[in-house]
Length: 107
Length: 123
Image 1 (cartoon, chains in turn red, orange):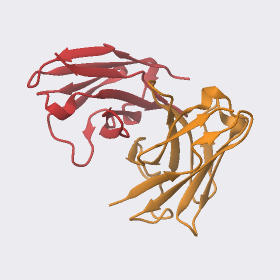
Image 2 (cartoon, rainbow over the protein chains, first blue to last red):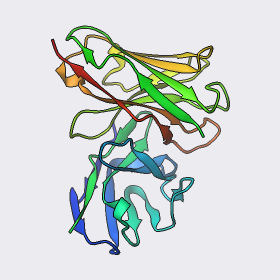
Image 3 (cartoon, rainbow over the protein chains, first blue to last red):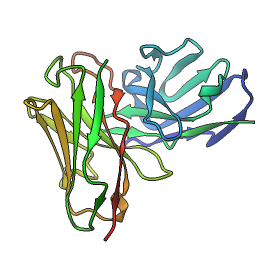
């Protein structure tokens, strides 16, 4: 099973700042199989990025994804109030696994 | 707009079988080449994929849960279901149903999710 490790566990930032979230895989993952989600409290996760760098329908361009192999990054260029939430990366390598999440909180 | 809605008992006794249904509206469960999946989230914890299935009967499961999981699709009702047997307190979680990316793509993700339903395992 491929294990995804997300860092940092918590990111404390102010609205308007840039957020950089990391997702590291225990073995190489195809970029096609890497996705990112945002989960607000009490809500289901929402797809942000698929294929490591493609934005899902309706996702604003302040969200961008990058990376390959074992290291992937989600960047939020300017944090909006609704972006303070938990973010998960997900991979598929015959079976789906999710990272442990990064919480982006207001500083 | 596609919508998914989970339904089923919120309380299940230990050793019994958890049964949930996901009703799909705004689209046909047989259209395209989509898989339909179940993901769960224990309170305060992260996400765990349980398994996925198609209207063709094809299914695949998380290896750690495979021996206890059955996913099936009912095309007549536009629903798919989850059965998880021999449950314990560790199976207490919010259970989400979701649509997986189509087989025609080389990308794998879940793009539409239900709101989730909390299932507690307790006597």
